[in-house]
Length: 245
Image (cartoon, rainbow, N blue to C red; front, side):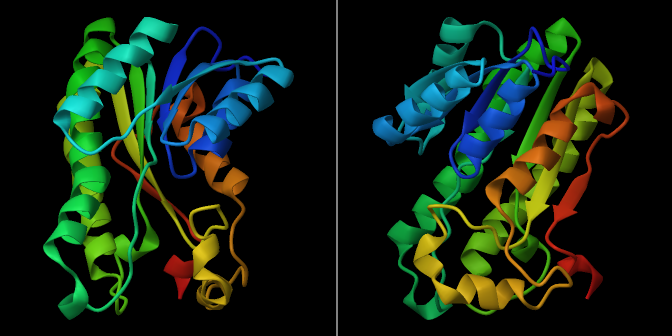
């Protein structure tokens, strides 16, 4: 097992979190995985432990400041001060603007923007006080390109693009690097409901296929590690070349 992240603790929320947690643990980090599904969480922990890593699962229904701060506190209780935060959890309903109700709007911005904001608010000051840390936000290619029916999701992730840059300016001088990964179409349990449309969307990019979650996780792990020590405020596209066309 690689040890480039040995002695560090990472907190990973949902989304591509399972593959990300495995990637961080494979590099020696102790990982806290947060999610709603306890069975899936237990499976992720077993997978990491069987590979020789250390992981914990915290059942968390994230949606507001209280839940975000409580998760951050619990992660530190289980594994020690958090050195790496990966904001991967997200919800992505697609559809026409005129058919979006207020409840859906609030849910998207609560999980995609509010929760990461208050996780950073809770954890980044401690990282800064210790003089080191890495935060990686997971955005999306539709945060930067207009696509019909994806305005709500894309706009919430566009907010995270700006927050990534703002937090880099705010916490970078104290040794905390803040960056983002912008995935293209990726095959996960969450995107399975998209069916063939995911592959059709992916086919428009040079790679001509959807990504596997481990391909996104590899970029996240790079940004979390010392190999990216001079990378601050970057939004790294991992989208099969969609930014090239």
